[in-house]
Image 1 (cartoon, rainbow, N blue to C red):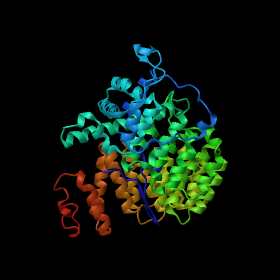
Image 2 (image 1 turned 90 degrees about the vertical axis):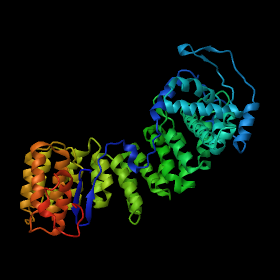
Image 3 (image 1 turned 135 degrees about the vertical axis):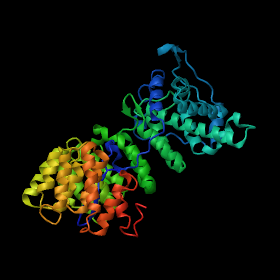
Image 4 (image 1 turned 45 degrees about the horizontal axis):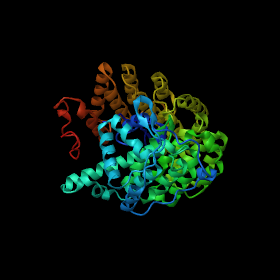
Length: 530
């Protein structure tokens, strides 16, 4: 059972999730490759081997958006074309670690490519970094081979048929070969993008144009393959830098615009661009256009967060416009609030979020609470509101964002705030901390005993939820005292039946069988303890 982090307001319950995670997860659509660590290790290994393609060759406009000619339709045609290409290899030179390198990698095609991809897939899944370091350069060193791999992913079911080892084997073995080859193709293509996306390229191609071609092919993939490839590319790095920077903003936004239903997948490609402030700064107009357009809510939220990163004042202006547009669009309102929570300066984020007066935006407050500067801004703003006697809903949400604060401060709020819902939230937030002492439980009991006092009491439901937090997070005397408090609530005949049953259901998993025998007839319709 998860510790309660809830409070009750006039508009309903508030529940905040405080799971520690990176800010990139603000739209909660992260897709993580199963073994991304192995991909990073492999990348580190082969980066020492494959030489850089050097500066972008030819027309400079190629680096700004030209797309390579599409490969022939179907994997068979692509592989056949690759097989017919001759080998153009220069004199090998000594490479680090005793390896040999060539300045140009010959294209791999035909049946050899399917077999090679299957080997890469198997090596990645077993963590064989040495094998990956030997195999990946054969693909990543040739633009033509990378394009052939991209074409193969459009027809993943044909991979086994192209592998000569699949001949004569039963259907299950053939499917396993295809699965390994498909996985190898995902690994190889994402590594290739990470290697060449920031310029240079294999001797037979331009890295930026090749990356754009891979992005342009994404809509042709099946849904599962597309999601996996986006996940691999979105988390790939080269020399410590994300594979995609802001030069690809227009390409990814176009993917989102063309298929809004898949924008939740494509938006993961945008996230690494937040760190490229110089590149984003040159595309402010594009970001403003994304906010004002009909893009999916989380795409517009990304653009808002990027503007906050570039210029907090511009971000605040854009946030006001976006929230105004979201008055009748809960999804857009939620995305805008999440972007504010993650990207706005803490003091400005508090002002904007509290001004919304919307308890349903608890996820945004949870994201804000995870920021290290959040608590100081929340404390300051809470102090201003309580001094003015304003906005109990805003105060409750601010108190919920104070997780990790000194429990004594939270208990002080629980005893002094003039609104019962805020006092309840203060107890809930304070009791989320592990190992709270008996003093907190005694304060909770005192608030329960004063529950009929509108200035000092806390409703029984809030006391039960806070006591459950102590049971789950506390230890020793504090936990025992919380169990006794719940037992007293369950046996209090002056309380509503629903409140007593809530106490019984909360107690049930934590006490010995038979210890609630005297409550066996409480609410025949309730089955929680039977």
